Length: 230
Image 1 (spheres, rainbow, N blue to C red):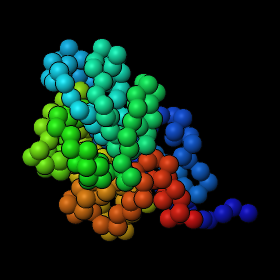
Image 2 (tube, rainbow, N blue to C red; image 1 turned 90 degrees about the vertical axis):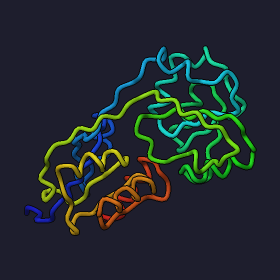
Image 3 (spheres, helix red, strand yellow; image 1 turned 180 degrees about the vertical axis):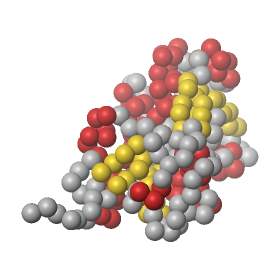
């Protein structure tokens, strides 16, 4: 006998590898991907000269910044402290042989609080062209922050039939910005956000029914989706 139970369709607004996509698809829901953002890396010769000779700490708020640094990390003077927002970003740095400090909560506010206790003076933030949070304000006037742009995010806007999806997943504020340029989300559609910064951007865009996991990781996000549809 055929089952009439509808399997929820979830749209990820970022590109996923075939391996991740296969792992995410389950009997309880199906996952599709339509990337609304793309990335390109800045060649090290362009940004290396922006790094001060002496720094107290480096900050990484994305895995892409770690990937950009990887080819030249051995040519740079490693500071006493290296901070990562998120366990996955921290793991990428540790694979480069770097000792990493990760804040208790995976967000920049928790990171800034930890750094302020150390009274760091010169800090470098390896980032993209679209920074979600202004670290200058969080760190305060006593810290000199140098933002080094090592990758660029490009918006890829297109129209989708949002009515055919039961849930939509956003992994960054820039994906929300790109998505909302040509699309809208009604109150019946559930929105899943990777973290609090992305959720805040969703709310500012007028998106309701946001669900955000406790930890800003893909594993925690998928647990939240599974718990919602079980």
